[in-house]
Length: 40
Image 1 (cartoon, rainbow, N blue to C red):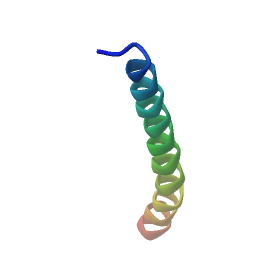
Image 2: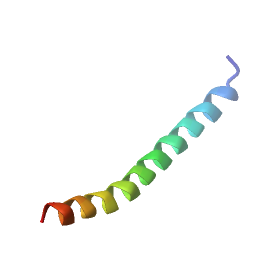
Image 3: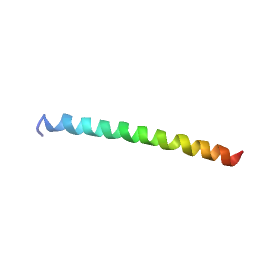
Image 4: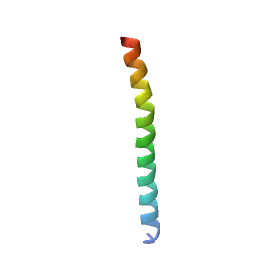
C-alpha cells in the first residue's frame, strides 16, 4: 500500500462525507418545512 495513496483516499472519502451531509441538510430543511405546512 503506497503511503501517498491512503491519505488521498481518506481525504476524498472525508470530503464526500461532508458534502453528503451538507446536501442532506439542505434537502431536509425544505422537506421538513413542507411536511409541517402540510400537517398544519
